[in-house]
Amino acid sequence: MPSEQARAIRTAAEGASLHSFHLGMMIAAALVALCGIVGGIWIRNPVKPDEQIHAQSCAGGQLVGASSEIGGPAAEPVGA
Image (cartoon, rainbow, N blue to C red; front, side, top):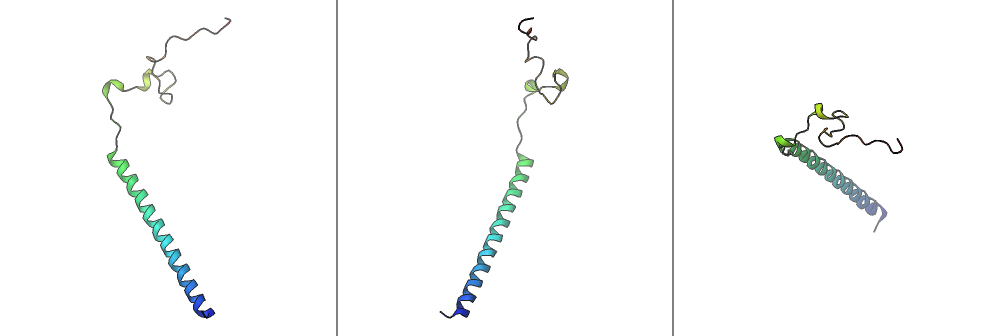
């Protein structure tokens, strides 16, 4: 095969490969965005009224998330 023809075939193959890669990346990005939107809109955790923990009853504040009902009286330190 002449070198000019081989160079043209190689250039065409590289261009087609790069285009296919970019197309695949665009499809993957679109699917990730679509799934994020679907998850943000329709997926919810069910909350039962008796399972809610209010920040007022949390000894460590709302970031800890453990109510005072869960913890018992504080234990005395060993050797006290």
